[in-house]
Image 1 (tube, protein in one colour):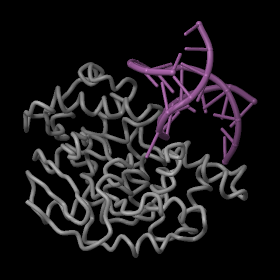
Image 2 (image 1 turned 90 degrees about the horizontal axis):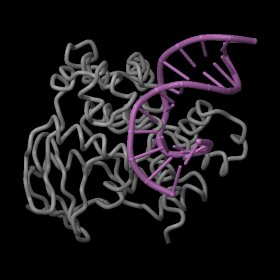
Image 3 (image 1 turned 30 degrees about the vertical axis):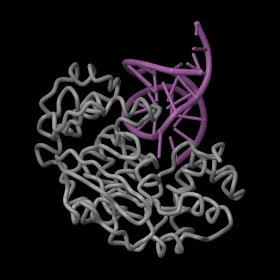
Image 4 (image 1 turned 45 degrees about the horizontal axis):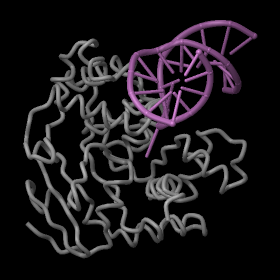
Length: 276
DNA sequence: CCCCAGGTGTCAG
DNA sequence: CTGACACATGGG
């Protein structure tokens, strides 16, 4: 199926921004899973080509309904962010599945990106279901909260989760038993939702911000990781001796309701600063 | 063998 | 409230 894009959008900047794990790049196509189906997506200029999902479902995931140019404009507060936005224009913040997103960022603590990818792929391979088998790649679903909750710490350890295994089990159990209701959290304010998420062990301020931004429609959330901390301190001297929490507060009020977009652009800018 | 990686929990001061 | 330090694990 095909779709002509009305708004400014870059599939590459969106799927390779580090906000989401699990998309495999095969040539000019991206293979992955969306809502339990194996999906293949590619873009050429203003045209989006896709298989395995519907136009509406994909459009919602990619946030094609929002005007990206308008969002970008709203955060252009200075030359630094203008520079970052111009390099990665078309980056969209996905509407990820909250459970998958939560597990992703629970696994992210004190760990590098390739290894996070590996942990999540291990969970899919060992505990998910095979959705598609091609010679280039095999796509698995991500295990449900019930499935993860039933696993022992040892089984989770076998997926190389390390000390995060107990946190993943606790979170999955709370979701499976209804003690954590992600839909309900989504309907709450950024501040309230963040507090609720942080009641689960392994979720601190940064992870809660990532979950809020990438899967709970809290586009003002501004996760401050070591990279963002470094960039912010370099670019805004008044923050030089501030801590992560203050940096987040500053950014949310400085960049406004779409501060999360600013975070993604700055993160990309720092991640690829040595690549022309 | 030491250091680091999209941090967080814990415990002493 | 603030600053160490541990935590699993793979790679440099």
